[in-house]
Image (cartoon, rainbow, N blue to C red; front, side):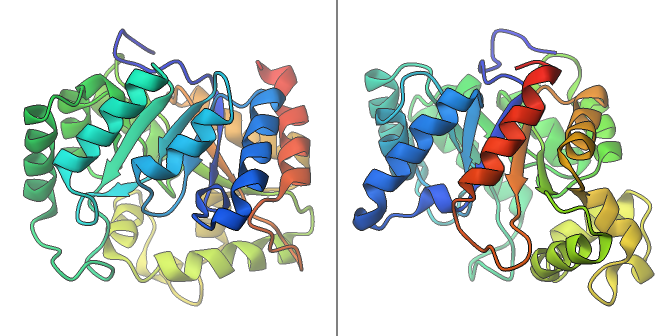
Amino acid sequence: MSDSRTPAIGRYGLWSGGLRDPDPARAAELAETAAELEELGYGALWLGGSSGVEHAAPLIEATSSITVATGILSIWQYGAEDTAARQATLEAAHPGRFLLGIGVSHARLVEQYKRPYAAMTGYLDELDAAGAPAGKRVLAALGPRMLELARDRSAGAHPYLVTVEHTAEARATLGEGPLLAPEFTVILETDPTRARETAREMLAFYLTLPNYTGNWLRLGFDEDDLTDGGSDRLVDALFGWGDEERVRQRIDAFLDAGADHVAVQVLASGEDRSGLPREQWRRLAAALKPAGH
C-alpha cells in the first residue's frame, strides 16, 4: 500500500520519547543507541513528544540509512517557515532520511489552541508556500476529516493510541496509496495485572484529552471504559502485552488491518523506567525478524 509519495521506512519502527533528549551530555549515548537500532533492523525512529527537526538531525548524522521522524511536531510550537527551512537543510545533507510528522496537539497543552482543523490547513499552506514537499510529511490524524486532509496534502497519517479497528477505518479513508503508520505501545510482560498496571500509568494522562477519548468513543467504547483508569477492554485494545510472540502477533494485526508500518513504543514495566529500554528493543527486534525484517 504505497506510491511514489511513501517514504521507504519498512514494516517496523520504534517510537521513543527517550531518543529526543536535548541534553548535550547524552548526545553520544543517543547516537550510539540510534546506530544500534539501525543495525537491529528497525526501519524508522519516531521521536516522541513535540519534537522538532533539530532533534532528528543528530540521530540522522549518527546513522547511515534509517529514517528519523518527528512524532509529532506541534504546529503551535514550531513555525512553519522555520520548520520548512530546517527540513530543506537536513534533506540536502541527508536525502530521504527525514520524515516530518506534524499535529495539532491538545487544548490542555496549548494556550492558543482553537479551530484545530483550520489551524492545520493554514500550517500546511505555509509549508507549501515555503517549498516543503508534501511527500515528506505525515499528519497525526485520528478523525475522518484529519485523515482526509492527510490523504490529500501529505504522504499519509501517523495515528497515536489507536486500535486495529481504527487502522482498518483509516485505511478505508486514506485509500490504497498514502502511508499509514500507527503508533502501538507494547509491554513485554506476561503477568496480566502488572502489564495492565503499567499500561494504565501511561493511559491516565491520555484519558484527560478529548481528542483521544472522543476517538475511542467513536470506535465503540463507552463512558464506563474511560473511568477508573480505563477498562480491561480498553487497555487490551490499545496496548499489546505478553511474551515476544504474543506482542509480535498484536503488532502484525495492524499490518493485516491495512497499516504499512507500525511505530512500536516499548513501555517498560515494573521498576524499569529507563528512557532507553535497549534490552527490550533488542528482544523486540529479534521477535520481529522472522515476520519480515
